[in-house]
Image (cartoon, rainbow, N blue to C red; front, side):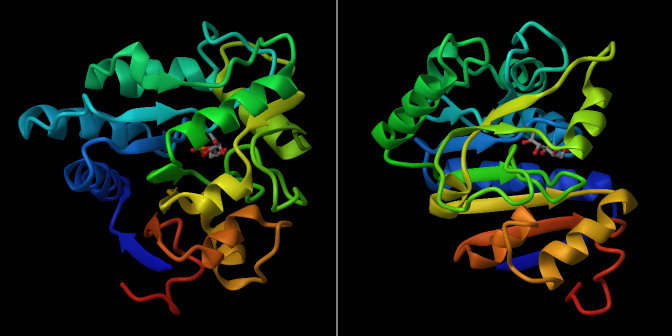
Length: 246
Ligand code: F6R
């Protein structure tokens, strides 16, 4: 695992965007799994700008969903799907045929999980997975205490995720379960980027990077991945900075 610490959110975002572009250059038919949420928001803006300026062609790439609020429509502005379409796919001009997100309204969510697993298998796995880190250490919706050997699955959201998640919604929304790729997908992805920004993430990032490797802090599993890059801004690295290379 490699750790890189950037001066601020702008520099973190620019470098995150550059990592994605480097992946497309290395492998033009890359399979990406890119998180929604506040952390990568600016990275996606910078990505669209860089891709346009440098004429990067995403036409051969494909995108799979990381997670979704179960039962929340993709038309809801708080959904991961809405976020990804508005902040990533539309700005990059990605065709819908290149995208496979979770159907959060599927009549049978377990079947939906198996379909996603099959889709990823058919694509021969994920080349680059970019995840943020929840305030409770979750990645995707792999909540503390989750099994580490799962592919896509349904999970009860913990109290932190239910309350923090309200920030994405215009009005108070009942958030109970998530549908998510599993930690097994994370560990099997050919490369992973774990990105965190802001002082509010400093404590959980210290636990993830310096505490025990345990599914009680799902982000700590990054240390088991052989091709992982953790990217933090200075504030998110605030509690680990003394030990970490700069
Ligand atoms: C979103 C996702 C979540 C977020 C995490 C951090 O697709 O998978 O795990 O990455 O909750 O959220 P932000 O970036 O809003 O702090």
